[in-house]
Length: 371
Image (cartoon, rainbow, N blue to C red; front, top):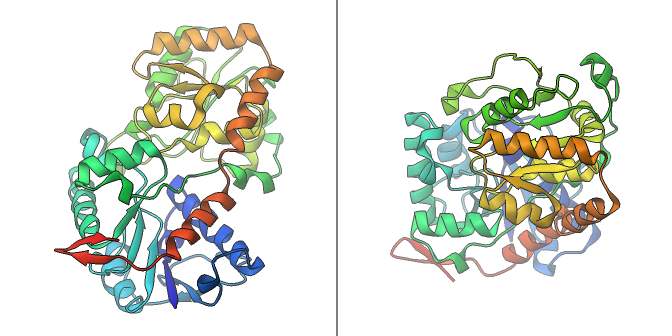
């Protein structure tokens, strides 16, 4: 048995999708190396097939990395990867893969291109909608939450029961040492600022957080905005500096960890998510979470966050005011966070992935995968 992993994520900028792919691969490698995986997978040959511009994924013991082809982007997926993966079971972890490969598991993280076309440029929208429909008929689709499973099943005319759920986690921050010098660099007072971490894409809805900070009117409790600008893809734009708002730009994980550790609360105003990892990352550092009422975010956070309508800056401002009055996180709040954190782990998700891959390959009937 030979299994290939689509390594295109190693050539892409690091966002939540690429982090998911890297952490799942590393966790699967650990389980394979320790022998804690289905027997037929222990005896299998494992490889990551990566494009020539891919970065390395250090520390792997059982999964080999092989650079193949000369193309890049979707062309590499459809031509170079398809050729190199022929005759193997293929796993694609980052939303796309070769549409003609029949023994193929593809993780599609959300249904945004179907549910919220206003978030995307028309070229991106057309490409990813077409990819989704084609992959739904030639591959097995997996996703990261029950919410996304139902959304994708409806959008792609699939049986929800055919879509395995293999969730995210926040454990990647366990190996990150916070760099607290960022607090001084940004002229912040510990536990006297609110934190937003995310891209400037439309679904992340940073503008609502900025308006809420302005309405709060507390210069001594600014909103720190961390993240890059994906306006070329998503059609959104980076926010400009405003009163009570600190634009920090892209930061290293060590700096973000420090901000999580010292924020009064993490603010997550997202309009649409497939899972919602940043609130879990905040909880990892015992940071209170004020989160959007979006369905996937509620599924992830349950009772470990307080919620607001992401279209209502006034409601978010009120939640921020309440957090200032409450002060530091309480033992009861922290316990609820811990209960959410133990629900998700990369080891659990990798084990679920391996259990699925150990099953017989799906057969296709009229171009649709069945088991």
